[in-house]
Amino acid sequence: MRRIGKPDRIVIIGGGISGLSSAFYLQREAERQGKEIEITIVDGAPAFGGKINTLQRDGFVIEKGPDSFLARKLAIIDLATELGLEDELTTTNPGAKKTYILHERKLFPMPQGLVLGIPTEIGPFVKTGLLSWGGKLRALQDLVLPVRKEQSDESLGGFLERRVGNQVMRRIAEPLLAGIYAGDLKKLSLQATFPQFAAAERKHGSLIRGMMFNRKASAAAGALPAAAKGGTFLTFKGGLSTLVNALDKALSRAERRLGTKVTEVRRNEAYNMSEPSDEGRYEVVLDSGERLQADRIVMTAPAYDAAELLEPLTDCRELRAINYVSVANVVLAFDKSTFGLDFDGSGFVVPRSEGLHITACTWTSNKWLHTSPSDKVLLRCYVGRSGQEESVKLPDAELIKAVRRDIEETMGIKAEPEFVEITRLPRSMPQYPVGHLSNMKQLRERFEQELPGVWITGAAFDGVGLPDCIRQGKEAAQAILK
Image (cartoon, rainbow, N blue to C red; front, side, top):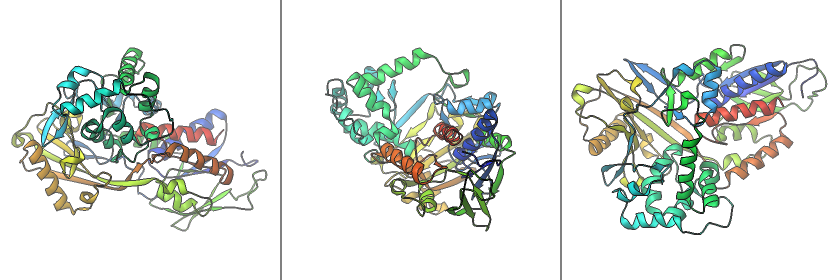
């Protein structure tokens, strides 16, 4: 409900993609409903964007945070269209479809038909050198294994091990899927990460059969908009900051408090929403000393920061159960004339068993043709995952040395880079524990009772990808203005 005679004052804590999407859809939905609202966005950083950070340097387009998004998740394409950015979308190089997996220090092409690490074409899978014959036969037992009767959540790694065996889980699925979460598959929730796997087992009696069916159904549907066709991943020609800048412009009427942090959220006990008043239901205290009155709050901060702010008001044990992993990325630019190597794909992923500092390497200038001048080469190496975060903390010189040693050992690259860009993202990757969905349901029900008007959303809750965060921001806006 709104205060009589006054516009709702909504404070959004966090200026990343979740907070900006929430603000955009709040503004749009309020206009549609004829409601008057006042939006204030607070973020400790000097600019909007959160982890999204595009660097333009010497003709390169360098992503210091996320570099792309899944084309099939339409929330971000819908937002881009609403912002007039559909012509800025671009897909991967059609000549760079191959992806490799490192095994015993050799690069093996990913078997044709592999979907999220699961084989959907038996012939190429049987021929791969990534697995032993025993590992392949164990995986194919999925076609005859009984379905798990219990429908409770389980770990993603436990599920894959149960259906397709340890070798597929460790050598193929984990380096591919864990790249999304930088996580340990044996600790991640199946239902919160890849619920389609469990659905495939239940409906088709086999994970492999279910993924085969899903692949054919997706190809037959052909429902993707033109912008999403032609590739699995998309980005913007000028980098992902294109989206942030457009949202910033679209939110010109919103108040901003950048470079300042929220230190406390207080409940105004005397608040009465049936009477006009300068007091809000909540008071948001900033480290600048300013106090913002809020009738509604959208909390998009990481779970650990949200817990710090909200625990004085209610129990936040579910937020504390979400651990975070620190990662880094190291981008290296080379002159093509001294590089000495041509790529035929988009990059490779690295299983834990290889013992390297890097967890993956994207051949960026080959995967995304807009990112580099034609006479240059751009590589992006990823460092850090659950249980292997020590490399992220190395001093710059040592980290660069470790990464260069890894790319020399795996690809034979000895060329001197023209420059190197390091981005460290401490405690940036939320890990969804087993039971995460029920935890979040319980948390939201408690908030509804004990913190009315406070909505908590973002990467820690229902998907870590950019489209997931945008979808959640839109849902938050609809729920608040309901």
